[in-house]
Length: 445
Image (cartoon, one colour):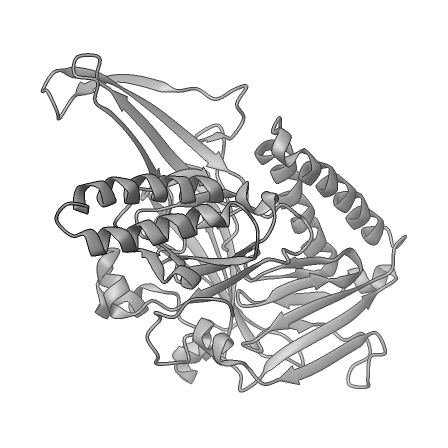
């Protein structure tokens, strides 16, 4: 996920704080009766996720009501699929944020809620089940007299969905969104989620058409790796900062993006890009490794025990997972953006993101009080690591092979640094867009 910051003084979006949120109330036309009703708009920012526009309309004349949720950021470069094993009450209470393009599947029931069939919503896993049961019950009642056989099959699905809430046995639920704007909370945060698996996938032409992206222009709109440039072009911009103007992804006003190609000793060339919008305060920092995807993935383990270890240069690509086994922590490639920094800088960025999450997203919520407490304990441990009071191993797992940690003893072997190559799985190839197969599978991975 690309790291972004939006200036609070300029942006109309507010942090998710129930004590200070301001709701805009406007008079608007009711499409049911033609008279005026009331629309309430809330522009809010959910930390670790994105900005949202939540609207609620109510007509006092005919009683018509409508609630809607719309994302306020750009479509992600890849879609996302989250596979959840529902085993405990905490799984039913997980927060779920969907878009109009979210598809929900329950493989064990051979049941699917297709994309574009439900509006975007903020709910829970149990809320998704309950709403689906209500909708299916209406359909069953309407079909009972005309198609009793089909109505009985709907009844079987309803019973199966209700049985998920009994928690008698684990049930797999798959949530897939072609826009990449899908969120399911982790009740064990900041520790790794033992019952949810995430994968980013490359959209096919049908999915691009569905979300309004021209299939033939999709690849051109994405930032290309350095390997797509010819050698002459690379030599001309190497060690020079190139600036170009383009629309801001947040407010669409024109802003400047700086790009620099640089060499990392004993590794490869990388493209560093930074965008800063003076209009809304939006900022991004991205690192794109050159040379394309490597033949094998790479697992890098570095022991952090002294200040010199914290000062090691580190390149974490946008396809790389960050793991700290001693803290039972794992941040997937979707959680942290690609960046070229130091180990201390990476830990500081992690601290900042988790601190913001703990102070806003979990504030005042009884269901997530334990998560907030665990996050505070985790942040204390991160601080001890930065003070070299707590030795740990930090792992980078990158299926694209485009991540790097500086050796302190080049070209001889660094005793604190271990680099292991591995062959990618079919799932990892799919995530990197190396498979031609259509993305339509689901279920437990």
